[in-house]
Structures are given as C-alpha cells and as structure tokens.
Length: 403
Image (cartoon, rainbow, N blue to C red; front, side):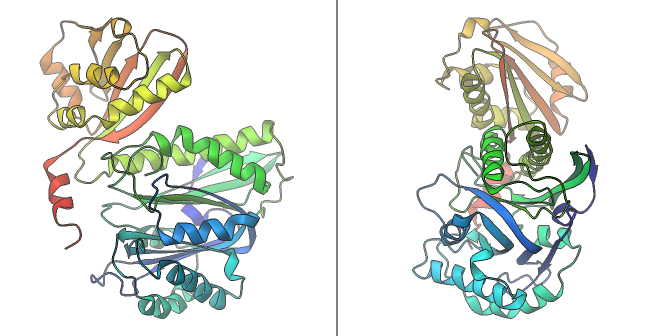
C-alpha cells in the first residue's frame, strides 16, 4: 500500500468540484461541493448519534436503503437543521443534481454543515449547481475547500493498494474543527474507491472502522447534529468483488483505516483554536472496551487539554480522567509518559509520581504533536484516541460563531 494523489478523485471514475454559490457572504469561500461517480456505486454511511439530526441525514439515510449511490452534494454555511422545510430543501438539492447529471435523484446523497436553525434558501444552490456540474473534474481540493466551516486547512488523502493482483485506490476528504466528540462528531467525511465490494461488506467495513477511528475523536465534547461519513465503491478497478471476509477484505480494511486515521489526525490537529494534536495511546488494558473508554476520557478532559496548551506536564490530570472514566482501571497499576519528536519522559509509575525534569517535559510538550502514553498493566488490549489542546481562541471562535 502507498499514498497517492487525488483525494476523492484518485479512484477511477470519480470526479469532484467546488464553487461559491452565495450561501456564505465571503465570495472567496467556496460553499457548494459535488462528488460524482461515472457509474452507480455501492454505498454506505454512518451518522451522528445526536437525537437532533439535520434534514440531509434523514434524506441520505432514506436514499441509501438500497445500498447504492452515484453522487454526493454538500453545502457549507448552513446546517439545514431544525428547519420546518429542511427535508424538502434537502430533497430539492438531490433533484437539482440529478437533473443536471441525468441520474436518479434517489442515487444522490446530501449533506450540509454550518449554523443550526437558520433557514436555507434553495435559490443560490439552484443557481450554483449548473456551474458546479460543469466544473466536475480532478478537483478534490475544490470540494474539500467547499465543505469547510471553521476549518483552517483542507483535509484529503488517497491510497493505492492491491486486491487479487489488481490495483485499487481509496481516497477521502473531510471537514471538522469544532463540535467534535466521540460517537460521531461537526464532521463530514466523504470516501470513494474503485474497489469492487458488495454493499453488505462495504457497510460492514465502514461500521467497523468508525469504532476505531472517528468515534475515538474529540475536540470539545459536543456531538453535532449533522455528522456523517459516506463511502462509495464503483468497482471500476476491475477486481473480483469482495463479498465475504478473508484476505481481500482485510486488505480493503487496512486501506480504509489508513485513510480514516489520517483524516482523524487532520481533524484533531485543526480543532478550533488548537495549537497541538493530542494522541492518547492506551495499552495493557484488560479488554478493548476498557482501552477505548480510558483513551477517550483522557482526550476529552478539558483540564488535560488546557495543560497541554500550556506545555504543563500535569500528569495528575491524566490519572483524574482515567479515574472518572468508569473503565474499571486499577489506579495503582497505571504508568504515564509524554512523547513528541523532542523525546519521551516518564511522569508516573504505578499510579504515583516519579522524579522527572520539568524542563525536559516542557520541551517535549511544546511540540505540535504530543502522544500521551498510558499503560494500565492489566492485560493486552489497546486503543488510540485523538484530540487537541484547549486554547483562548476556542472561546473567541465560538463566542460569536453565529453572528
């Protein structure tokens, strides 16, 4: 497996585009994105666990009942959530795309991101879709830019892998910066692949992967109303269709995980106001469930996140987060270390502090990527969670986000 260029356009038969249609006042900011497969594709999605769900999710879920899709339309600047005519608008978006692409409206998935509770006007979208379709091409970056809200960078990746001797590609784009918390986060992820895989196995792959990746991601503890991850597989690579578990499915899962882990890290690093990517690796857990709960609790701790912003090796906050995680840890067996490209330092052994250099610890924690290493010494299970530091700018960004 190797990295390749192209994002969601890396796989055969996929094109993308992004334009400014007028939802956002800033005319330099693209706000409408489209991803298109030249042929109908097997498709699957996972959605936010928030009881309040954006209208686009309800429409997408209905459209995916047959496990097929051919396009994804997404706007930024307005979440189309808690609107009386939200479903109608989402359906209209699908219809407008289908008319331009000459495909079935039921094969169009729809997503929106932005302010909740603001009426979404279909007019700028209707005017923007023709030029959006006209500009379809190898434009993954344009699509990635168009789905951004408070993001500061685009997020895309693609990999190349072999299934049965046939070269396949899988790529993705994502947006996410705030309102991100385990159990789906405000996060949208669109994945494409030319690998031939059945709808059932595609859904199984995605559902399994998100438990290890996107559900282990936290920026601020808020679970959004519009979070969704979609994947389309058009089979144009020409490999024998993956219809059951085995070597081919394992290869596909590895490719999928490579892409999703990269996007998770990108989202965490670009958290609202963030200056540091935090990665908590828990090892020595009695089972995977304990490891996951423990890791997520650490990256969700506001006190720990604030300490990381200040480059303060306050390991007691790690222990505190583990203690209230209800993961069933034994505090007297816990070891904690901090690691970055500046080195690694042990700060806690068997639940108690050890002598360490505060100067060296600060040097390690001043780096932009920090690993929080926790060993529970209770078994062989492990898990990883991602987050970011908590800064002054987070409050500034969210203090007037709507206005």
